[in-house]
Length: 313
Image (cartoon, rainbow, N blue to C red; front, side, top):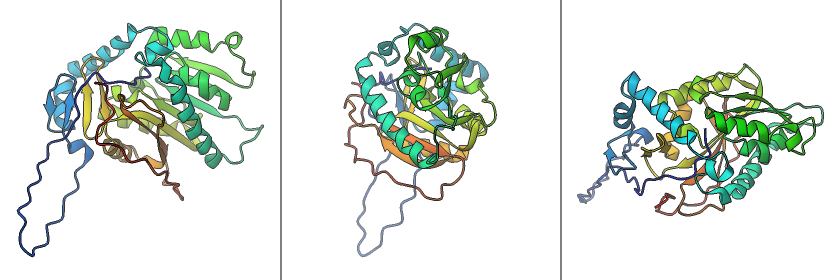
């Protein structure tokens, strides 16, 4: 739906824990119980705190009318935004180059490892989810894939993408083209079975509820070719979640995402942090996800994050 970089929330979600040490003499402390990401508290952009994600979702989309309103308001937020790089990046158009550079490095590694024998005879197809004006397709995907389909619910964004990616408006060969332009939201989209080598989902999944997140990715799995994979690139909350009341989206923590991946039946193949990012912005991670447990996982060591989460003040 959009390339969403920022949060209007000035809050740093800290969860709701208080650890008290009684310091018993010569006694081994009891083992700590692991806390699931969805059980950690979060906050919204108005300063309201929630005990956990379940409480937040019950409040926001607890009945069908509320859920419809959630999605309508989310699309409505972007319908009044300018169809430009600066518009879809929330006023941070100057971060476009850093974003594409980080994505390209990640994609290059994945393609070389997942499709090592891909040559001139291969025909690679990608799906750009929440494509906006076609920024990621034009600057990245269309250079690596023979066909790219775009999925976007905001009609004037998609029309701009269609114009930007028309053959007369770009310099790519006839072997690389934008093929289909789907004007619909993620939660309603079902891909053709086995069409895509890569499904790219960037800065849009925060608009989906947890239930729709899981059902979307389960349908997306069926849209992959054998050996294909999904890339999710998203803002990351330091802990728990941050709810944006203005555009109706949620920024989840890394642990929160990993729990949802497990519910989807997806396995993490590789993770990478976006580098060259402004401190005032949310941290951004890229996840490469597979439908089968990878035989060999190449771990990418993430830099230690500072205590301050990257949230716009």
